Image 1 (tube, rainbow, N blue to C red):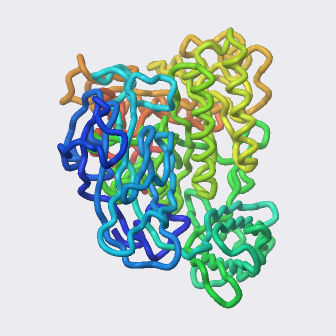
Image 2: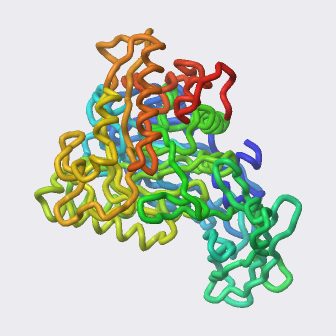
Length: 592
């Protein structure tokens, strides 16, 4: 894996070692060991970062396994600074030892964490990292997203993911180094906010140099003193006013302009840390009932993306698979994705930044309400927002989906409190992006009103969402059998987005008794015909600020993707593109 596949694309250092590959592995349902020294004989070899349930792990065991162990050796040259061990994601709870010393614990299956392993490192020879994992399939009070709690996947849920499922890597840094780097685009004032937080041994005379480039053009070269290990500054870019070159600096799906950056941490003349990064200048906001990108109304054409592969589940088979998914999304005419019930790999977000794709990030749900479930959710959601805050592609945070984990919103005040609290908490962590409290129905505190409606008849959809039916929609109509807004939270003019619709199942090779969708087409011609008519409705109804079609690709028993599970299109991409954009199809190749 080269430097361009560094797992954390916005904080890149040169001196790192990828620990993906062959690890020793054992299941341990009997709980026979508590520490690495007591571990039973290793029974398997696993290919990290693929979960043991997947084919690509080399194990492919989808049974119920609540406890497991990993171990591998690695070599690292001696170093006089600090050594950091990073995990992209481990599902769900884990402990980590290095050379028999416990270095960290982490709870939460979708977020990254780091251990400072300096004191555990041997001065020479092999280093040994051991990981213990707990992941109880029956625990419905943990954020689990689309992972099924039954032995066989049913309905809209998919096979489980246990243990390590994103990259593991180690890097060497100075004794004082940059721990946090955060970018905030400030479109209105033509500035970039830059927050740098250092950690380590040195407490005074720390300075950070920030350079930003537009291609070969140096836009900024600023030098700040850190106060209390922190610098938080606004970097002013030269505003060309009404000149067209102003627009050339703005990021959008149509023009994904990224600004390269370099962060150098200094103590006097000595360089302590140097980081490659990037940022972008863009805004995403709300003006009455419209969504605004860079100060202009922007119509969202999203597709629901589960982010699963049949051979590797939530882990992409390769970095190129992530890139290809984004290329295919754009080739089908969409300008964004709603990542459904999954905190996506930062490498996906990197390609979305680079290629130009808007992303709604959604917190994976728990399926039982309790104080423990909400506490877990808040912790993991906080980590996700902190990790992904600087990606320009992310435009919306979604806290809850379809009242999952808060099933009694109409009756139970505690459930309503959870949604409203998490909405305001998210807005506190990030005041720059819209937040959806509960997507689909039963909305309360929210910046965007999302509606889920799987009516398979385009004519009924057309009639339901006529502008004249606007008030009736909220007072009487109940897609999904649920009220759209809770009492006390009438529609206040927020943008309305049809955030789930379609779901047309079509696969001539699939068994209709096993696969399913919300409606079904039997031929390619009937499939694209219904898709065209549905998309004509949502593209032309003025009450909508955008839409999200279900879904990007077939996913296990769900045959309702525009693409098959292997990402081959069910009908020509150009035909899908034209329908998505509500344009005539001329038979030519797809734009992308």
